[in-house]
Length: 141
Image (cartoon, rainbow, N blue to C red; front, side, top):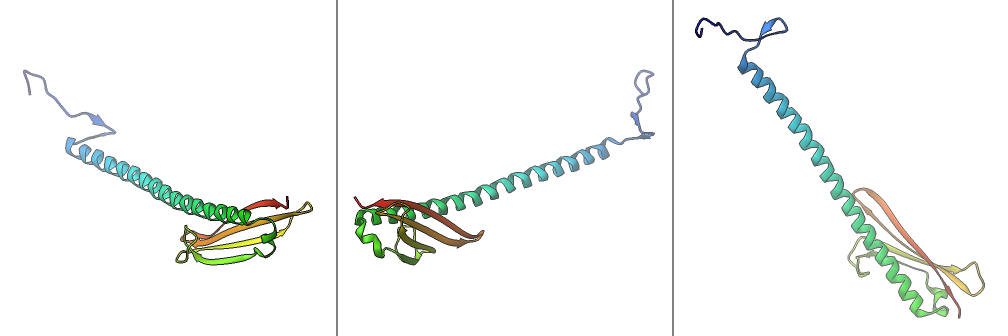
């Protein structure tokens, strides 16, 4: 009691709240909110890493396709008659020791004196089987 004034705790919902109990509830809610936020950020990080790994392997596969197409184009039209092939367990440089399989198919194109070259690179990773294909036409000039 201060100079004749009596101070009482506030009455909320029909009962008096203790300051200590209210702080504990606040702390528990804050910790729960922080845990939810951390889990959300963790999920974003995991998905970003997963997408990055898939994109990196897709880029390697596209580079393998493009390198083979350029090599076949350099050989010329006449060499494409027996260009069909399959290379297994190649790495991103096209050498043995990797997990890619590269398949080359050369067929007659839709126009006379053309060949349709299809290069397909496939692999299996933690997320399942993947495939990348590139096509081009080579003309007999």
